[in-house]
Picture 1 (cartoon, rainbow, N blue to C red):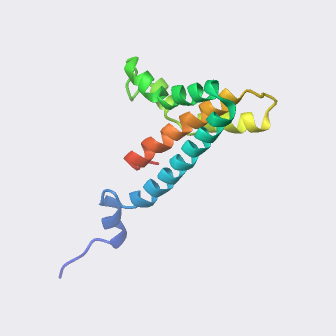
Picture 2 (picture 1 turned 60 degrees about the vertical axis):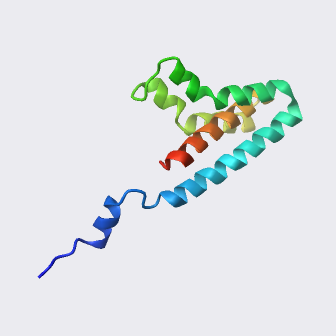
Amino acid sequence: MTTEPPRDAALSRTPGVGSRPKRIVWGALALFLAAFAVFESQKYGLPTTAAALVFFVLPDLTRLAGVRPPSALHQAVNRVWIPLVVLVGYTFGPIVWPPLFTAGLGWLTRIALDRMLRARA
């Protein structure tokens, strides 16, 4: 008599199961955020473009500065909620400075792009 492992146990051990929907969602979000950043950059000019580009490469800049993955700074730079708080705070707050908004868009675009390529949540 052979005993088969439960179906759920086999799926939980299989690498990549469920990663395709995550990749699609993160990719769609990255595409939307990038398009929105381009729209805002065209609307408000060079300072917004520069802010979006600088914050888009922020994770790479921290890596070049010698910050490695287990550190708190590396983890903070790659958290979704930080640029999301910037975007929501700008949207509902009293501050009117478009480069701040596009910086948040660029940063969140980069995080979404990284998560799409690595399919992590």
